[in-house]
Length: 172
Image (cartoon, rainbow, N blue to C red; front, top):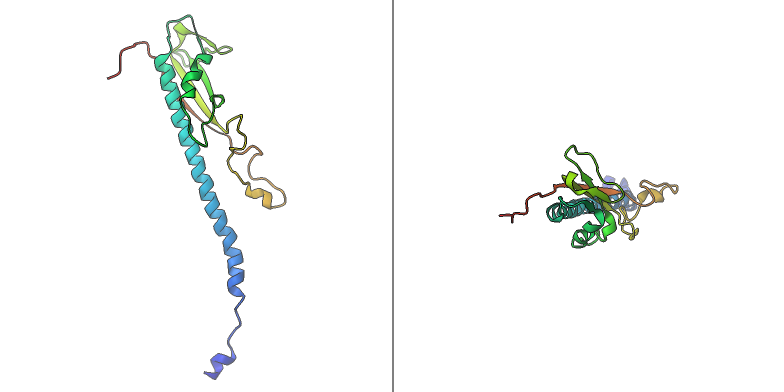
């Protein structure tokens, strides 16, 4: 017993040093998971919003008219909102394609008789809400004023395509 008491090490500060090494790594993993889940949420909601707007535009526009204007699509985009991701109509952009998948959109107008598909793209962050960016905090700023992400955050977008309905039958 005397030998054990005599050679006992004093390791009272070891736990403090271990905590100082582990806590920043743990926090980086936790906040990284938060940001990753936020990216997943934004991508999913942008995709859902683009699908809904594309479906409504494809079903409700009149393809046999002389021209189709993308300004007529704004009421459909106004109906779709998701907190924290889809906040305004300016996030949506539109393209109208012909039967050969070529864009026929010129200055927001397209020939109605040639129109076959509408492509709706929803982008993030919203132009009028720059504070909604991903990531909220850039960990690269902690190390020699470096940045891991662009200044405005990560740019995300999702697109959806819908066929323009030539038949006006009520869906079953």
